[in-house]
Image 1 (cartoon, one colour):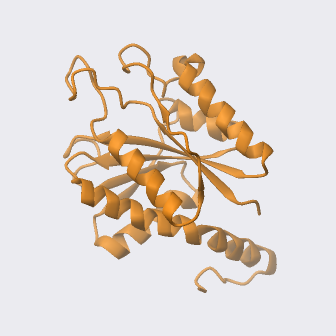
Image 2: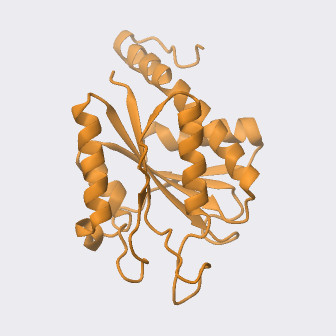
Length: 210
């Protein structure tokens, strides 16, 4: 199994007024969370792209997480980074970073992890976060089949993709703590996947072995 290479994209980070408004919706915490996540992944020795892919314009001008945004320079940049990592023999994992106002959509969870139903990423990571940081820290949700076009395109191209939603009520230290646990889980994940594959091949449940 090839080693993973993580690419982080932040599609709604441009806040022209500095904060979210009805006229200029944006993800207030996403930029800070993305930089913290990139640092945490790097610190555990995993391969993560030096480049974080940022939106070039507010989402009211072009929402790069919708199908119309596929022709934006940011989406071209994402595809080029993923292609380059694949050519180096890496397994690409795209993390699409967002943030949400507390109490809306994802309640008071500190982190919501969105992925396709039946995949192990969201459920596995959320289980670890709730075990390490306390129950109700994180929750797993199914990805929206049409609105989340970054996820749809990347998985359609054969890459792995997942969406993170950070609670904007979190302080910087909270975000760093979430990301430190996340990075540690990512570090252990390749061995978990190998055990699961061996289990499937040999009919033995080795998934709980350390």
